[in-house]
Amino acid sequence: MQNCYEDTTRAEAYAQLGFANTYHLAFRDVPELLRRAPGRRALDFGCGTGRSTRFLKQQGFVAVGVDIAPQMIAQARERDSGGDYRLIEGELLEDFADESFDAVLCAFPFDNIAGFDLKARLFRSLKRVLAGHGLIINIVSSPEIYTHEWASFSTADFPENRNARCGDVVRIITTEFGDRRPCEDILWPDEDYRAVYGAAGLAVAAMLKPLARGNEPYKWASETTVAPWVIYALTR
Image 1 (cartoon, rainbow, N blue to C red):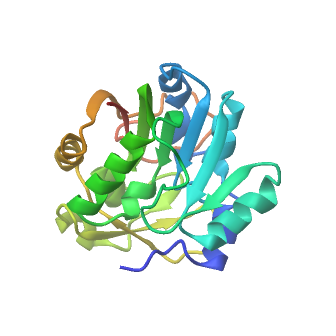
Image 2 (image 1 turned 45 degrees about the vertical axis):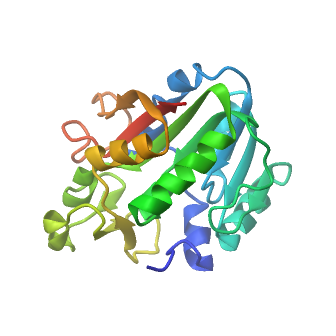
């Protein structure tokens, strides 16, 4: 499966995204979780164009963003010239010593990482660089995001998503920018994430499935009744 984010046009499109509409729900409750971190050193794993790294900095963290897509890192550096954005190869975090970070944020990268073994290996690597009382926050797409309509996404063209099982490719279109090519994600339900976390030696300290409250300044579709995201807070 090709990484659909290693694409200049898509990187330029994603660089325009903020925290509105469906994405608001992905980040709304994260600051409260981040208060559990024992310090201010943070890693943004799969930082993309740097939106989530800048979010960490706004929360008072000294943040490093890493990604495997050079097109994404280029956009991140262009928009935040003073930021620390690093291109990594595959699953390597060799630049970082053990217990380098008090918090690790993974905002959607595991939606695109296939296979139990690779996911578990990456989480073991993240655990290694996590401080003893640190926190990993993993934001992932819920299975339901691929079968409903949203303020930021459409799945109407992909009815086959309803028959997908763990590890299958599912498709979704982001409607907030002009590039309407579908993104190909990997379906991974809650029970399967929990198995991955267990294999990596991580515990689930909290799980959130954020819903819209109805008083936000956005035109919701399914968000008030169906959670588009699952947010896990993980500890060693």
